[in-house]
Image (cartoon, each protein chain N blue to C red):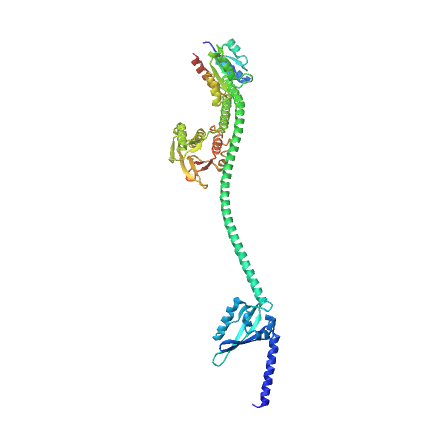
Length: 126
Length: 427
């Protein structure tokens, strides 16, 4: 079975590293970790992820802006996005869902729940 | 009688007359005698001192037979005539006081004391009167009377003024009392509003801080939990101590996350949306939301909700948060089952308003006095091992305060367990 490609975008460097390690050691995923969303379109075109884990609060380009950029991209708009953010208010979730994200996980999240959310999102993609 | 004896008597008589005249002339008062013949005044004789009182000499009265009555002020004639009539009728007369007009025109007051003399048949022969000038005394009396009258007038005037002032004062005091009462009510309302505003402001500040802190804390928590996950998968599973340590780390992250969630709940209190609501409907709705927990713990709900309670201005969601919190506390206090009592009723307050009282009680172990005193403070919990964060009742108290209401918690007196009493103003 081909490994699913997951792109993790979060300005918390350690979080990105640990998520990458936890997902890749399951042997089911190939992870590209990014600490900002500056070149998101180019990175998506290069890596062609099956799913993106996206933080909201980031310097320069925030998660919502990044989702907007992907929505305007032919390839990007087909990739499911799961938001992983420390923000947990309904208003924050609503803004994200309006941009078409498939799930919204409030940090902290353990690996089991994260994988469950990824699998669910990938099933919908099929 | 021989001539020598007659002469002796005549000498004695002359001597008496002389002594009498010298006495009469010596006094400033004067004596007069009015003689009668056929019951009519015939002659008047006035002593020498009459001039001092009347200005007339005794000879003037001889020349002018009616001078004695003419000199009496016309307005006082009736007093004289009444006195003469009484004398004629042999009635004992009292001294009279009247005015005379002196020869020089001056008006004087005199006191006339009369002694009548009758013959064997009781016919009036004459009467002798003593006239005393009492002008000074009379003037003093009149002045005194005038002063008295003036004084009485002033007293009456002052009394009237005082009565009026008193009446005015009573009205003013009553008005002041009413105003004071109104001020007191307004002050209390203002104080309550101010407290609510201060509370709202405090909570807004805490809310803003909490949101910021929450974001900053949740990211490291996410790293810790991901780290613990990685380690647990990459360390020999037979090393129990390490596995236990990782489990503790994950549990600590979960607890920290719960506290952050509590703070975020708290930060959302400041935005309150008041609407007139049926408090019983909110209670029933909240009970339904925790129905699973209630049934799972074998708890029986005894609800006594008074019908027809007035609508109360509350934030429905926030009050639901309060009730759910209190119901879950009661459920957790009775792990082996028991009765959860909920009652609502209306009660009059001392200020003349009405309040809706809500009581929630359980049959748990109750709380110590030490815990009771600080139970509404943040992070105070008796359920730390069961995952309690001590935020719940802190939030409950703040929501209740923002509604301008009261909440108390105490052990039940009749049986074991605790009772929460809320007092919501229905006006």
